[in-house]
Image (cartoon, one colour):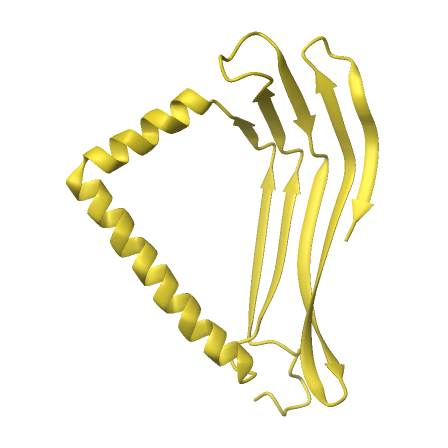
Length: 145
């Protein structure tokens, strides 16, 4: 009951925590994967149906959200996501390594002139950026928005 004394201000709670995630971006691999998905009728069809289902669900959730129903409190925390990016498209030995430290994104609901307003906050702590020789381009950067 949203009018009840014990109501926390939202209807569902979603918490996502991931640690030590590593992403190596390789343009050629992404191109191959997209080509494979496009060339396989079954996979392509499944991807299309999934996208349609997600869009339909998002549209319904947005309508509920506007009416103040089905509000979801979300907190996502990523610990030490490591991203390796090649400097050039040829994939030479030069690359940048971004250790994103800890990323926390969460929303909250506040009352503003009698209306419930959703606010988002993102924090990145201890972010580092190194070149392929291990030299720090950025070290221990914290930011929030």
